[in-house]
Image (cartoon, rainbow over all chains, first blue to last red; front, top):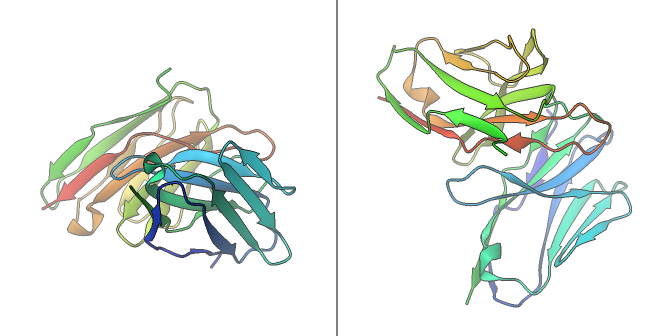
Length: 113
Length: 114
């Protein structure tokens, strides 16, 4: 069974701090990697794709380590609005299909004032 | 820009009843899929479709049927509802494109089976 593992947390972090969490995946042939954000009782929404060279989007930085088969998400200067569950998603195929797409169970982040 | 639209948002059924969860997307996406999300289980794929007229089973297909007669619509049918099917159901669509094509989710259907 292809798996994606995440620390469920919760991570309790003071506002303004930097927080990072990892996700490991078992399928070494995986092609595409994503971080999604899911607010309580809402649908998952794409936060960012993860590229081989790493990528940054504002306060968010994603890294991919193929050799160790993990991806990471770093959030700098955390805001109260960053409180959510972050889902790691791995796709063994290069296209957009859902088959094989594996979701982690999510890491719950709570930003405290 | 509607994106992925799911109806209904909430539904309560009695054991043994049947119903159809509707999903429509207006982005001309080839791929559509249904997931269920249960506490502690994460998102699990029920059925998916790579185009009109083509469907396939995901990880947890038992008790559900799908059809894809048009590119836009991908309804999920519960044949005989069971309490184990109490869950939040998400429909998603994505483009065929090369790499890093994300899933676009509807806002979910919360289903309770009594």
